[in-house]
Length: 366
Ligand code: BMA
Image 1 (cartoon, rainbow, N blue to C red):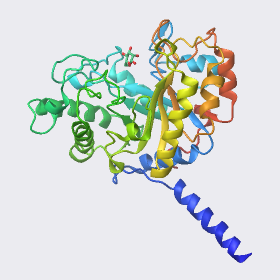
Image 2 (image 1 turned 120 degrees about the horizontal axis):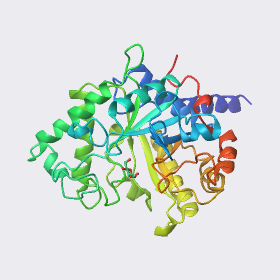
Image 3 (image 1 turned 180 degrees about the horizontal axis):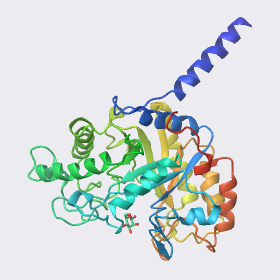
Image 4 (image 1 turned 90 degrees about the horizontal axis):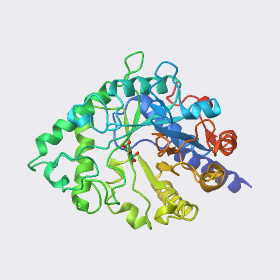
């Protein structure tokens, strides 16, 4: 009997230790950033945050209603997402608006609003190609040229100065930095970005990641970031880890996967397979893991939310699931009033497994 009691006490202690997991990249991370990490870890045992890219910037048929904090998701279910995605593409070249024509000062205001309502912010970076000057999708080899010693290294430091300054400007009402999940150089196992599989070696990708982290953290003293690594759809753990920068350089393990029947991607088969690999890794490494990008463009399947998404991730331990932007009628990933999947989205919204902004408490500690 006594032996059993001890076993119970020890296993309770160990399970709590797992929940007390800390962010790995920045030992000087602000208390609010550390709290965000523990919140994500703990909350993932209950369910997942619903996230939407650019939710407050625009939606199908409207743009930048900054006064009312309008959002397609809010219009549909009366609540904002629990997690907001933003993109910094074009900040590196000093522009005032990003590649989707959203002003950075508006993005800052919306990040501040999201933080104020207790929600989480994540930032990706569709950076221009630093060698050719083309966009992210210009696969001209660039990584080796921007690393220390490379011909475009100084230019790249300029890129990072722009990114770091913007991140430093994300302050709350009391002047404290707002924690951000930063997710650079995503989908690198695909070959559509200049940092993608065919455009750089493993050594170059890892060096780029580490240089970027060190520059922001140690040179610019940005201490309110959690770093997320997010390959696209993969077939094995080995593929997932092929260019992994290392446990000390990554806080959150991500996965980007889209429902793309036109490319013969069988989402309901691939999603659980990919999530299983992600969850195994997350548990082994004791890290937060998340579905960092997903969605079905134009959501033509009316029960997609419950049948394709919820069913396959509800008990997986993912901390969040973010759907991509609602750009216009030909590109949207969340429902808007009148859209075919609204009723199913409401079932998804009401599930105890999904967290929207009103469900959040104490994300940042006190
Ligand atoms: C892509 C598409 C583009 C967009 C980019 C950055 O996936 O949505 O239209 O410019 O993301 O948001």
